[in-house]
Structure formats: structure tokens, C-alpha cells
Image (cartoon, rainbow, N blue to C red; front, side, top):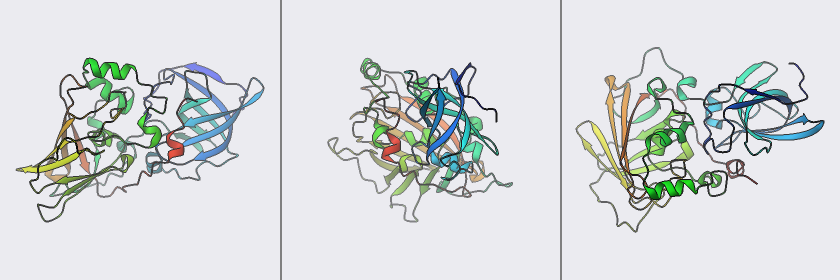
Length: 344
């Protein structure tokens, strides 16, 4: 590895940076490339961080480098010992716009080869069997078919930027939002309620648990912030609007072979779509889950409505692949790691 004592700026076309707290505050159109020594490696969610010391204008500078999630990197073979203090590494990063030594990693190279740390989809890291497994139920572990997804610049937040049409109230709330402040819910490990788990299947597994008793609740879990939702199947109605839950209140029914989930009663959330548009008391989500392709795949669709902030309902559909061979990881959001992006 060639020694570099100064930082080199290169203007290049880059791949999508999938930061959970959005690309705000990052120069995603440029890359800094430099060499340094690892001083700390934090293998935690929602982001893995590498602290490294490099020489800049003859002075040592400690950079805080954000990588992907521990879940995504674990699927790529990373562990908490992949990097250790004292390792010499060469990095390519997207730097913070405000000049502080903070950046998102595009790639890291150390002795032994190149390790990519940018946007990792489940498709990239999947363990596809030669013969696709079949299921006679939507129960089980599912991952997205990323080959059929539209790629939105910015990942999770880019998806909602492209698809939400805002009311004046929604646009005003978005323009006043500071994603690099403690106002960002992620800084306190607060996840994003449905349809967040469906959109995040680009990077995380979804698991559905169904009991033999048809009146028993269905459980839907996501690796994303360890969300677990109870879908009541016993015919009950939603509670009064004054009773509000962080994941909302979900009731379900079967329409032939399709599970229909109706969710309301959400608590207020400052940025459930990662773009500074809130959700409020009138938010309403309808989801549909249906097997296709002899049970090897499932179509998942949602319609999102929140008339206070969204000008018209948004509908999205994607295809998930039955993946019982995949390991479902816990997220275990770490408060110290979660708030590191906040501007001092």
C-alpha cells in the first residue's frame, strides 16, 4: 500500500450511500482518499464506526468514519475483530460538508484485500440455494428480490423523497427539519413504524409468525430496529384515537389467499420516512401479503395515507423471496453509536 501523508480529493461518480439518517450533510458527489491507523472499531448498530488517525498538514487528525450496519457487514463476513486498533488502512469516503472530520465509507483496504462497506443489499449477501425453497404459507423468513427494485439515490430516504407528495404542512415540516441534530429520531434509537419495515427489506430480513389458531395474532418482525408488530386476527376494531402506539394498532383479515393488515393509532413521529416529514394522528397504512410462484415468493404491497402531511395516498409493491436458510439477526441499537452523526 502506497504511503499517503496528505488527503487527496477526487471528483467522481459514486455509488449510492445508504445512510440511515439520510445523506444530509454529506458531500456524496466527491470522495476523499487517505491512509491512516485505526484507533477504534465499533461493530454496532445502527452503524459500524471506524475511528482512524491520519496526518493532515503535518498534524494528526482523528476521523470518525461511518460504515453500514453490523447486520449487513456480518452477512459480508465481517466480525468485531475484522479491524483492530493499530491496523493501517486506506479508505475512500464521502466527507461531511461542514469540514469536520466525519465521513461515510465507500471502501476500506487493508492487508489482505479490498472490503466494500457502502450500500449492501440482501441480494448482494444472500445464500441462494440451487433449488428455491417453497412455502405453503406467508409464515417464515423473507428477503427482497433486489433485482426487481427501482434504485433511488439516497436509499431509504431517497425512496420516500421520490414517492411522497406533500401537503403544505408536510413541506413546511420537512424544510424546518435538521437531520444532523438530536431532532432526528435515530439519534435515540427510535425506529420507523410501518411501512418502514417493508421499505427496509432492501437491507433487512422480514419474518412472519402465524399460529394454527386462525384467531391468534400474527407477528411481523423486522431486523430493522428489532420492530415487532402484533396483528390482531380476532375481529376486534381499532381502539379510540386517543390510544396511540409507536408501531400503531394493527388488525388483520384474510381475503382468500391474501393477508390484509390495517394499521392506525400511530404516535406522533418526527421523521418516520427519514426525510423530515412527520406522521400524526390520522396516519393510516394498509398492507397486503400474498404468495406467488408456488410459494417461493411473496408480493407485499402497502398504501400509506396521512392527510395532514401527505397530499395523496402512496402505494408501493415489491417481491420478497422465501429464505429459510438466512439467519435473522437482532439489531440491538446502541445509543452511543446511534447519535454519533449528530452535529456538535
